Image 1 (cartoon, rainbow, N blue to C red):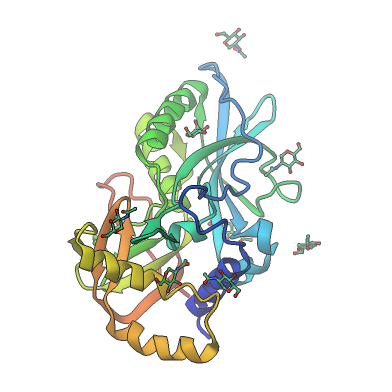
Image 2 (cartoon, rainbow, N blue to C red):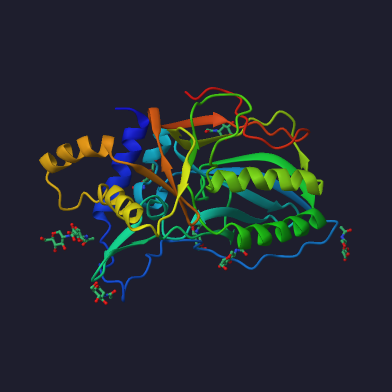
Amino acid sequence: MNKFTIIILIIFLLKLTKSNPNEDLETFSCPFSNYCPNKTEVPIFEANQTIEMYFLQAPLLKPELNNTLAGLSLYHTAIGILEVKSNEQYFIEFDAISNFVNAVFPNLVNTTNSTKIIWCDTAHVCFSKAKIFPPESYFTNSTLIGKMNGKIFNDFMNWVFDYNTSVTSYQLFYAMELWPQQEYTPYIASQACYNFVWDSLYALNQLGAFFLPDLKLRHDFAILHTKPPVVVNPKDPQIHQEIVDFYTWFDWRNKTFEQIIKDIIFFIEDPKFLYVNGDYFLIEMVVPFVSAHYAVEELSFDSKKQFKFQSKSK
Ligand SMILES: *[C@@H]1O[C@H](CO)[C@@H](O)[C@H](O)[C@H]1NC(C)=O
Ligand SMILES: *[C@@H]1O[C@H](CO)[C@@H](O)[C@H](O)[C@H]1NC(C)=O
Ligand SMILES: *[C@@H]1O[C@H](CO)[C@@H](O)[C@H](O)[C@H]1NC(C)=O
Ligand SMILES: *[C@@H]1O[C@H](CO)[C@@H](O)[C@H](O)[C@H]1NC(C)=O
Ligand SMILES: *[C@@H]1O[C@H](CO)[C@@H](O)[C@H](O)[C@H]1NC(C)=O
Ligand SMILES: *[C@@H]1O[C@H](CO)[C@@H](O)[C@H](O)[C@H]1NC(C)=O
Ligand SMILES: *[C@@H]1O[C@H](CO)[C@@H](O)[C@H](O)[C@H]1NC(C)=O
Ligand SMILES: *[C@@H]1O[C@H](CO)[C@@H](O)[C@H](O)[C@H]1NC(C)=O
């Protein structure tokens, strides 16, 4: 069983065990996960204060599955902040507020004449006052990556506020044909916790933060292997029906095993879609269809930011 199969199983497990809020459009509301438990007001530091930055990792879905997914190298990543003199600690992260499972699969709600597709893929930046060093921390890995003064931190938080208003949905997958491939531009980039972390590190570098040399920071990510995606019009009734059929396939709640096996045959032939921030793309998947990796993503501060992984996945 490869790693992706395991992820899919876990997602289905969550999907199956999650009580579907309701099937009624009037009363439907997106579920709210344990997003940003220790939300804190952002402090304003003095220019003469020293702030250290940490790269933080916690096992993915830790609240639901404890440390299980660390065994598969599946982590959530965030940035840790330490004000050196006071020892005040904070973390900053980007997270789907309805749990990332809801950002991968929509809710289908039947109305009198049609099936509505409702996405609960909202994501926000969370700023929390919390311990960042294990074992007291939620995070299990805390690696020092650099430092900055209070002025740079304040400027950085302004950048974060902008990010938080411009990036408001979660997108788990990269869409690309091949991986690994150096200096490759994916057709569609993911918009996940690590994208926020890497974008932040570039922003911090621009603002003048100091980074330790030779950082080898790893993150995991998932790829849909596909030919160039084609944007489609979901208002077209036929396309709408195809999209509904595609996502209905993932609703395994009341299907027998036999039915699922029968459906797989249609699934392989039927059109497949990817939803990205309000748009639907028709995708033509290629071998190996879906993959998951845990690899170092290079921080090439002196060159223009691009999708550039350093090592092969394990
Ligand atoms: C840092 O600056 C603040 C105000 O600008 C000042 O009150 C404080 O004494 C300074 N601290 C140090 C250690 O220089
Ligand atoms: C989570 O896993 C750790 C060991 O990895 C264990 O010590 C702890 O008791 C577990 N917590 C729960 C709630 O199962
Ligand atoms: C919506 O209706 C279709 C048939 O019209 C049915 O197959 C499907 O299971 C229903 N979906 C939900 C979520 O109730
Ligand atoms: C459903 O379709 C019927 C017949 O086409 C139409 O009369 C009715 O207004 C529609 N209802 C809704 C809620 O759109
Ligand atoms: C990001 O935006 C959300 C929604 O407006 C808000 O609840 C959250 O506090 C913001 N995060 C930060 C770090 O300002
Ligand atoms: C939030 O704060 C509470 C109480 O201070 C603490 O027990 C908990 O571990 C914190 N949560 C996180 C995610 O750090
Ligand atoms: C913690 O993260 C750093 C940076 O990605 C990595 O080099 C290190 O191996 C990790 N440590 C553990 C115990 O996973
Ligand atoms: C699944 O079956 C149960 C019991 O028959 C029913 O209450 C529920 O609405 C069904 N769910 C879907 C999505 O069809």
